[in-house]
Length: 243
Image 1 (spheres, rainbow, N blue to C red):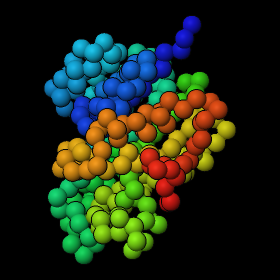
Image 2: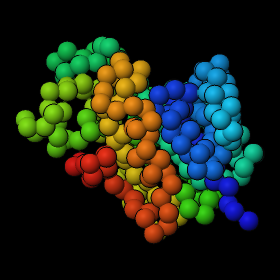
Image 3: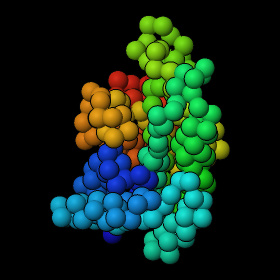
Image 4: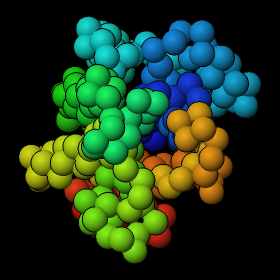
């Protein structure tokens, strides 16, 4: 009997998250559309279900830790495990900017969602991931998280000074490194994936890639087979990204 994989994709009602959900479902994965807006989640489920894909909605808000705990209980009751966690949900804030100008409250909001929220979801889902025969965690990061690239005047990311967003994704990278070390020897692997500069609401629909293109690499790492199951890496489409 084929093992039916179960995946949770946070922030999956639109953009890259929706495309990750679509592509995972196209590979035969049962996908839970994690979203804080029930109406948008329902619309996303209807969109994918109309294509014959197996998807369900799951209420989860990275800023509401009670909702995260409730989501974990729901997954446990329905499936008893989780095979794939894609930590995709994240925010930007118009008051973010270079260190001399960024609003501290904006930076706090970004860090609370992008890092603390991601950590909370991961902690809540780990017991379920440990029950899977080969679990995969994909943390959506960004090339803007690279300290190396941020400090290189020749890098195209050198002038992209968003202290809140960049720091939040650098913190997600630290989570990836430390979690990979903690889970070493287990059946759970974790990687940080930069999807690239994708045209979504998050980027104001600027970018070089479509959401469909941006979803491909995260999906690849979510579906890593046993012989390909590297852990603790930071990658983008062009290859390994420097920390």
